[in-house]
Image 1 (cartoon, one colour):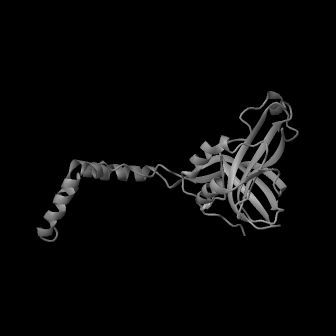
Image 2: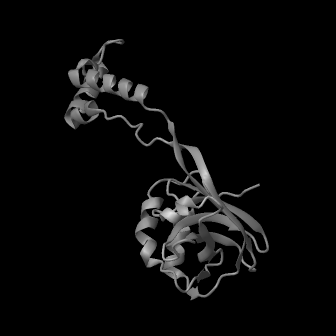
Length: 233
């Protein structure tokens, strides 16, 4: 059964970056297997929040006046604000938007997976890893997809990492690779860029820069973490 970290991950990242010493060396994480494939998944639709201009149109003074007036009104007296043009327009707009919007939509993308083992004596809590692709027909064409995972991997335990992304393995590919139908056009490699342990220790790959991904990290942490284990940086 997979264990998901439902985002004290932001707190962990902040606290570790402030106090932990980064040891730049290979981490004790063994990559056992990896694969990627095309996929279609349902994702949450963020456009389900209709605008309600009537709420902003009602001033603080008006709300206080109406609250005081209702104290002396007989039961059943209608609220005059409900009959305003702004309120009726807002109610109609909300109905239209709710009818057009769905809570989720199907998106075409890719699943990137890696099976790893924690070969250290410490529990892993945060993992930065990378799926790297080198085109066989054009070795100069190297691309990578980086991911952040919130996990809890105890010593000598294995974990399947999986993340959905709309980004393909490579943005560009040569005509020779497209014409070659014999097999995988890429040489593939999994890189463990940074491991953050429960005791505050951080192990980081020498050729990888934390500073270069900070903007992406801020962006992906702006959205509340759900049931997903990993996100694309």
